[in-house]
Image (cartoon, rainbow, N blue to C red; front, side, top):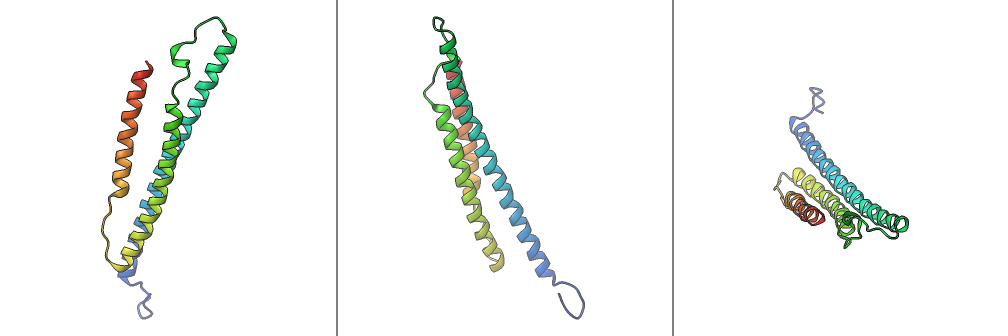
Length: 140
């Protein structure tokens, strides 16, 4: 604040707004990574549910055939779940690194956009979508 006028320096106010925008972006990436990890957890637990259901059906119907969609699979759901959880954790780490890097660049007035997280999330969503379509086609 300027002591003469009682007002803040406009450049400091602008800088504060840019820092707050950087923080909102960081929090958006954190929410995205938490969402991906939660989805991975659900996929993993669903695989466990299918395995338990298979075991339950085998115990209660010894002479009958188990429907194909309840038979034990190759464990792809479990692998995908663990992969998604790991991807979410890596995204959170990269988001923090990006946040600190941008914070420093804002202070030095040398901001350069980085597309690593953007590419990572786009590639991940496309890869997960393709994998899930293939997985669902093979389970019909």
